[in-house]
Amino acid sequence: MGIYYPLLLILIRSFSAIALVLAWALCLRRGRQQRARWGGYAYSALLGVWAAIYVGMLVYEWIGVTLHRRALLLEALAGVASFLMAPLVFQVFYRNERLHLPSRRLWQALLAVTWAVSLAAIALGLFRNIPASIALFLPAVGLSLGGCVGVLCSSRAPWTAHRNQRRWMVSVVCAWVAIVFLWRLTDAHWAEALKDACPFCLVFLVTWHTERLTFFDVLLKKAAFGSFTLLLITLYMAFVTPWIWALRMSGWISTLFWALSVWPLVLPAPWGYRKLSDWLDRKWLGRRYSPAQASRYFLSGLQGATGIDELQRLAAGRLGAIFQAEVDVALATGAAVPASARPVSLSAPILLHGAPAGEIRIGPRPQSPRFLSEDIALLVSLAEAFAFLLENHQLRERRFLDGQRERELQLNASRSELKALRAQVNPHFLFNALNAIAGLIPRDPDRAERTIEQLAEVFRYTLRGSQREWVRLEDEMEAVRAYLDVEQARFGDGLRVRLECAGPDVRNARIPAMVVQTLVENSTRHGVGAINTPGLVEVLASASGDRLRIEVRDNGPGFRPGAVPPGQSRDGGYGLRNVRERLRGHFGDAASLAIGRDAAAGMTVVAIEMPRAAAVPS
Image (cartoon, rainbow, N blue to C red; front, top):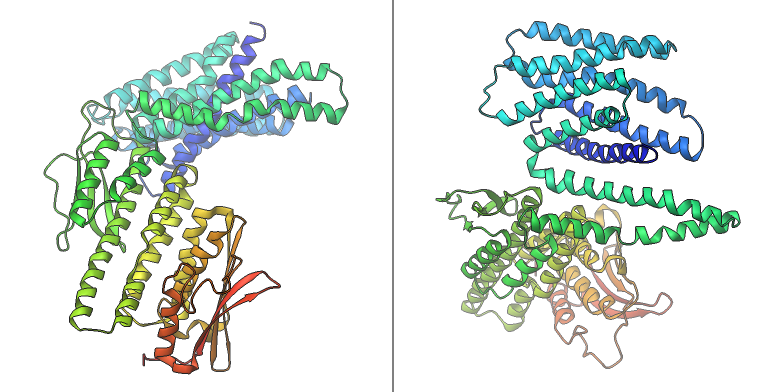
């Protein structure tokens, strides 16, 4: 077969290695989530052994071809893993069917014999009695695979539930037994290739029947892309590398030239994976939008909602277009979410402050494939975005009611203006943050989840800050930290943050709510937001005697002399003026707000000084 058989064998082993590593990672993740798994922990161990065997074979081949050496340690580890594979396969099938076996002690005894033979083979191999060790290999494999077939055929589990799965498993295991014996007896190339493909076929079958939600999204996409990439690299190494070495350039020039020549393979890799995923999504899974496109489409359709009812209606329409199914956005009435009168294929809760406030329900798709793991993840992220928009609308309604109550009580204009400022949720900040989260979902889902949590913390603190006058400085600093974390998700490396709060006495000091938050928002929006270079925002809190000092510093352009009236913010608003008036109302002349410039550091400084003991409003 010439060069084609080794290349075929490497491709089979490479594809199997990639798929087995992914399946093992999936199995471990399900174990951390405490979810029921086919085969239990024995299946996790078996996948780990198989993954180690195939990865070890690839590394061993690479060392032999490139370094012309034998990796004795890898040979020993591969032998041990191969002998462990046989009893582990039997263990997995026995564990999965043990509750339905009529003569459990018989199968336990056969399993014990299989383990004993395999461990004896390992011991003989470690004592360098290789022929005797190999002689025990076939009995161990025969006992294991024969036991698997016997367990499947003897099980009294109802065949109606997983009829096709059990039939295919019996067929695969029987074929595996025949192929292994043919390979050992004939040493045929085709038998060895089929023997190496059998573990992947079994994992493919188990994953298809027990983990179908993640089959396409995890196993198929990544394994197919990894194998295709490996094929390109193999062809490159086979045809391009010998030509480069034949040029007989000096060592470092040849290495540099070889490294640069790989770039045409490396650079299109993200594009290729994206195209492969999009093709699978469109052709096989009936998805019209990628996760990022779906998030942008969903958020853009809800920006014009003027009330909760309209928000609910628009969300149902956009979700129906995304998932191509009937959608019901049910909000809680009182303490319970109303039950659905229609069948539901997919659902996600709408959570506000950790409590259920509703549920998004997706109906079945009669003409499209079933929903898979990416559909579930997308629905969960869209439900979280809808929850934030719902909370924003509730906050607006509460602001409206608060404003009515304030007008009915005929509060002074300055106080009403302050209340509105403190209850305000900046819609630009909200939609910028949500767009940043939408961009993070496909690239860095963990960072997207953390940013959503920080955004929720900002909203919760803003809502609480509109209802109370005094807070601890530590609580205010935590809200500031959450706000800056959300801004960092949007700006990336273009925003650096430094927060310092010296000592427990300083952290426990009570201050008027939202004063530091207002200064930080002003610094972020009109300070570092006005420059093209990386921005820096610092919040420093310290105490001297009975005085508390809080500084908000940024490396923005600063205040131009005469451009902004005293007390107003940089955009001509009233943020700084309101902070100054609140400090004066509570402390009189004992508190101050000063604006300056640290020329040495090139930073604008807005500093608050007030008495540290502030217990009740004046």
